[in-house]
Image 1 (cartoon, rainbow, N blue to C red):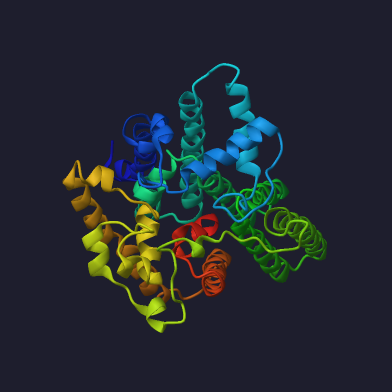
Image 2 (cartoon, rainbow, N blue to C red):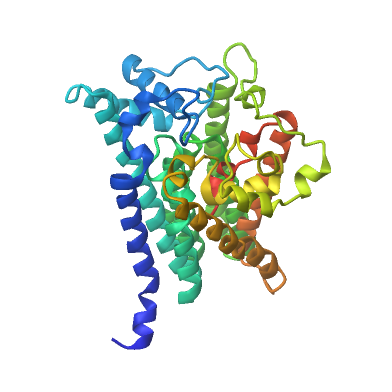
Length: 401
């Protein structure tokens, strides 16, 4: 095989390795791939996701009652219902075949693995469309394939993996439409974006990016018939998208009492932040992050109480504690510290790249828009609900691509 042909296989090789890593993690290494551990959960024995029992409780409620629970201010019940409806349906079916709760949860974990793999595959094909450079393709695919937070999602019970899958699919079909203008692509993008909204409320940002792309197309098309078609699509997306957002907001956050019921994580011990301090938004405590090797929501205050530090740390490792692993294998913590240093290439690369973009494409515009609107929402939530949990990278997940 010629050297150029071998180099061209690097992105595909990274994709395959990313899939293997996810399957291996779920099957052999992931704490959440051994659901018998869930049964031993207690507040003083938090291993990874401190809200894991709440995700399970939500699924079990749907399975037992074939309905959604009343909205309250606990950790999960204001969440969008699609993931829990799907998992509750399968949970109820699996109860006919298995008596062990651990076995049933162990099967549900594999849904997350397949969603995570699906998101990675979408990222692979999207990358092939937006760049012809093998090295750019390799960097982006490698980022998705091996970033620990994304690998971890493959073995969790929660709605993040489904959200990532739907979001990646939405952006893939949107880019296909931008490049080819085939109606089937925009329909697929709209359909997945609607499902994304009902998986996580932050999926609404994706609806806005679709509208932005359609407005861009409308503005740059000279053909009157095409303009009319695109204008019809804009009306359709606006009506469908915001109808879904309205229903989602009403069902999850504004029940019949009319009281807005956002998760009150800011009221929990060691969750409070102080966004009135300018240092909260400006300090990047890399030394403390390296010392911890993670950005645990209840961990080092210099990490959790500064937005840039926690946002960056949770991008790499989520908002979880890996102490039960690093205590057994200290070399893992050293590896995590190395990843933190290596990962700086990503934010620094974005900042530097902004100075070299001569002409922005529509993909550049919708990417910048998604990041900007996410930052605005994060900061606004932090002022109203000053909690560490409201500052982690999950709020970027639906539009991370």
